[in-house]
Image (cartoon, rainbow, N blue to C red; front, side):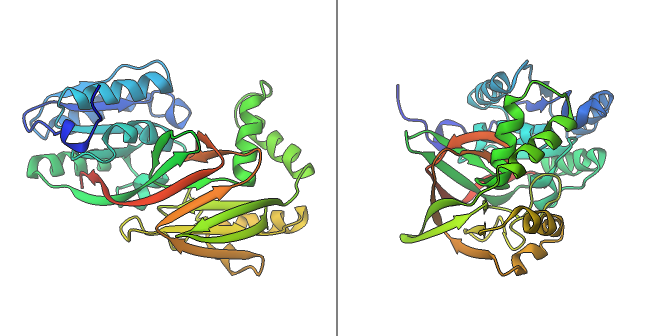
Length: 310
């Protein structure tokens, strides 16, 4: 089997537009909107092909297969999780891509300039397809200690938020948002700074911290601007480290993340680098809100890795 390169996946100008849609995105509130979105995308004059998938793994595989078969573009209808799965198939290729925000968290789509309304976003995508227009943006390329590679567009969480997500995913009760709330309470009770080793463009920094985030763009979790100065077109990663917070301080600082003013707190440090290695014991990272690789990981800013239809 030969190595896959960007040249293996050239878009076919006459090929269909593949659409990955997550019917459970946004807690299913926009399930009935899909036919209208498909109609709006069809206004570009190209056939639209809906990809079928019953799980996140199947969704990713379906996107890879579609790109391998020469689709002219890939569109993800859903939230950051759906976008993240689809992104794995087009990262580092010339196949154009677009997110149509229809989930609970739509951080990557909003941060890269797409309208928050899915109908308006679909119209933007259709216009870009008609006019043959795309805009390159950076992605973050993660490499695990075992060589596994993943891409993300928004933020990698490697601290308290990742630990809470991991706790919530292990719980079978309660269902829905209450499970996440309970996981927060459990992990707040267990809160302690952990020792991290960061390597920033070759320079080692040892820190005790409860929050560590590596941003290609600014926000995660539905508008929390954890890396407020991150720019997905500057070829750099923004690293935000929240140091030795106790429970009371963390609870007080957390709401400030929505405005991005948490970086002014004296226990918060920020860095900027092209390549970042994050190492700590016992933490599984979450990228774009999706369970990802265990630490240690190396993250590299990859310019023009994605071509957006807008």
